[in-house]
Length: 358
Image (cartoon, rainbow, N blue to C red; front, side):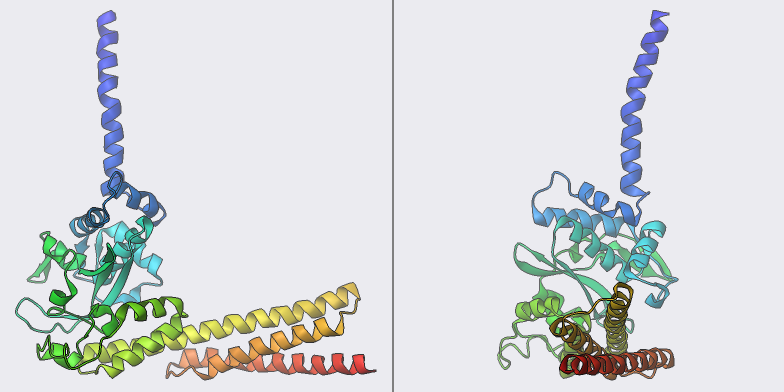
């Protein structure tokens, strides 16, 4: 009997740590949801204080555990960034934008400054690729670097993906990376003398270093981060245009960028108009239900505030430039409603002034 008890204790003592390790391994290598991302990111870098090593842990895990999805080449299939992340975590397959967004999401959790960069690249033979590519820019120890988890994960061969981890794509010096990677927006070159697209195409990698003034890319990045999304995109699109649109990749990117600007302006205008409308309606409901008079100064101040908001909404809607029929229809609807409410507010403002004068 005693022997059986001892055997049982031994088995339990062996089984428990194995079970915990197995559970931890499953968490680390298989069952990761978007909701688990914070916990998972911290587990990747636990007990590692050095920023460079923390970043390498993330880079290595993404490159080794995500395979390139050869059957998926269009990002329009994703409804949102979260949708994109859920897909790559669930399937363990993704395109370059998913690799880059996953790197950024994990780095955001552990406090490493990271950017997702869009552009085009050269292949190993020096030919410029026809598809848009995505990679990351990172700040480590106050210095800017390029990393590419997609190319680090492996390579394409006869239409299939071959996994082969290549750490050389980790923390590339921008001065070296510019010979392979060309961001659409020159700010993401991280260079004091960024190349024009023509220079990249002709391999004139150092042609601007003496002739052009210093480009303060760090200040430009800080400016972009402080602006509204649509204003940041406008500045980026204008800068891309100044540096030359010489290939289909850049032209297509600018087109998508302009359309996104229009959608963001519509969304902002719609939100502003909706808030102003609810404020106006809420005010009228309050004085009707409570049967009270609001002080003239307060009522006029509120009317002016609502008019100002509606004017901003209408101004944004007028800036929407697109040929998309659905978006144009939505813009027209919001604009008509905003103008209608504005007239009502203005009429009520006049009534308040007349009542006070009487």
